[in-house]
Image (cartoon, rainbow, N blue to C red):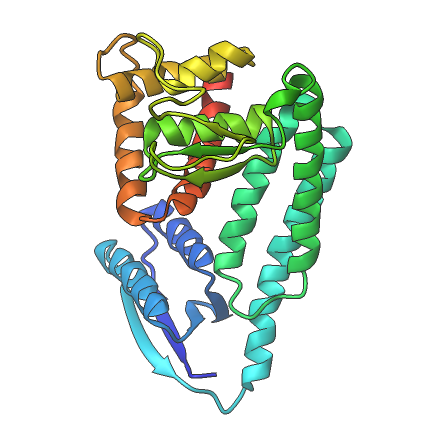
Length: 303
């Protein structure tokens, strides 16, 4: 162990919300409490930055905060590591319980959103699981099982109608943005949960089992005043109103004609810009974009 960072702080009694806010922020970065108002993270550049931001929030709220670099004679490093593992195990146990409850009692229509939500939560816990807590594997198995159940429900509902679109590799141009990310999300969520994606220029060679989308000569691409997302949804069927709303948002952003005037479009545009700036790799963009469209779909379905 290369060392630790300690954050000591004193939060004023008012405003009332500040104490809860600081406690939540400390939990989000994975810090554990050694005692009241003394929190610990394993030494890293990210940990120092996290503590610096939290300290600034405390001070801005009228409190005091100090950050120190530390090593310990007692408790031993092993005991401190166990504290971190216990915290993460509790998080993992909560995920396992939620996943099992969703499988046991959840309606088929609710399972994809539950699987997406818990997958996102699992990834958040992994990021602050600094010492590989033992409960991680059980949580991963529970979330994967829920995802498989959700994929099976979607498959039985959709894929019998379009078996020719399953087990295929879908190819699109590199540098994916809103239309291609949204289309790939629709493919993975509503057509083939095991769909693979490849990125190539339109003049590349393509295998017989590959399906091209959003490119010149592609099987699914722009059609008249429809973007690729709309063209594919029109071809295979509209699952729900959430997909319809996403199609309108993607249309407005991709074709820039303001046809639907969706108020959400500006915010989604900024999110896509952030994805493109942060993730130069197209596979990474799809992975992060899928999570974003899962959340958007959930919101638009219940709206």
